[in-house]
Image 1: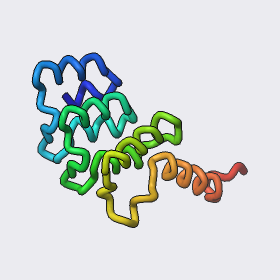
Image 2: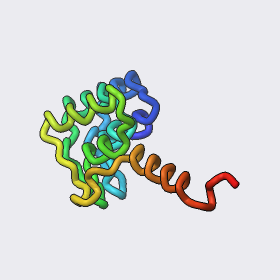
Image 3: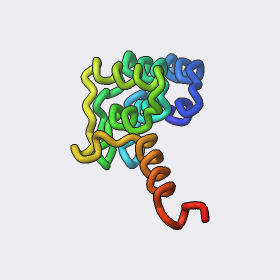
Length: 125
């Protein structure tokens, strides 16, 4: 089920659910298909999972919830923000420690890029 979410395979997700695939299944690290849909920013797939009984606040071993993934992996586009808003509207919580909750992958990359550009080793000679 989780693998079908990574490429936005909505038709496959629907087929699996219609054939009684377990939407709440978690792997050994506690990750569910809803975590994967949130990571890949697919609001349509995430909504389908929630409508079919996925646990909105399922926590992985590290405490991350689907909302944690959606917020962290957001790329500031309309679809990503729609997913974050949807999960919040459904009662989603961010399971990351408070000091991590403002971080996003995009923000971390930007910060690293800025540090590299200012670091003497990367300055043009």
